[in-house]
View 1 (cartoon, rainbow, N blue to C red):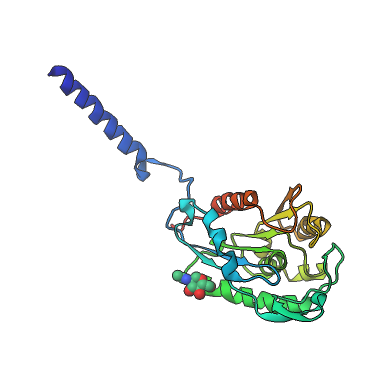
View 2 (cartoon, protein in one colour; view 1 turned 180 degrees about the horizontal axis):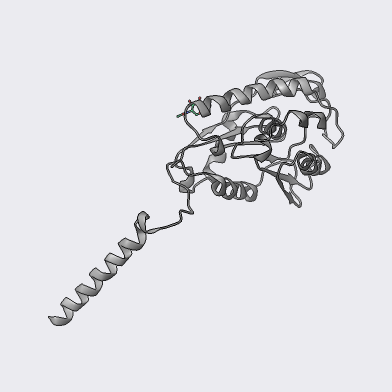
Length: 249
Ligand SMILES: *[C@@H]1O[C@H](CO)[C@@H](O)[C@H](O)[C@H]1NC(C)=O
């Protein structure tokens, strides 16, 4: 009988310390973000693709950090595309040549028009109460180029921009228009080394371009990867966004 009481006391004691260790007030520094912090992930698809076709990307983001994330997968409007002999297709801005190289010509006015639309979406999300630092813009190929342009030209600091197999769609004179707050937004750049559509050299030109403006950019090269997105990249992106989400409190 005595030993049963003792066992009970020990168990109770353990329960108490377990509860104390796990109560948030006993944790002096909060390292994990508030799971309820609202965040926004905007995904910009590539040429000829559609937003809904990319929605399965969400399934890679299983962490509870994404329990209050508003995902947006818009579709590009249908536009004539010069490199495809003027054929109409979903396209954010005009592209003159494929493959895209580090020195391909850009249609800057067309890019800037697309940037305005992305900015309107971001403005709306901030007006709805999302902390700008919890807003992440990601995009593949043409959508990656638009991600770079939109995040760089947004006047506030955002959570980050992730470019998959993209390129820099304007000349360095645009850097005069980048605000000091915008320069604090970090970038992550993924590029396949076997990419024959947007050449690896076009991707490699990204980080030096951003560094000229004092913008931080991590570059990740994937050997053997063609013009596509790999699961490894998406798992990596999940971790990167998770580590950048801010607590709302
Ligand atoms: C999520 O984002 C979209 C695109 O900006 C917006 O239309 C929608 O209202 C947002 N949803 C919520 C629940 O805020």
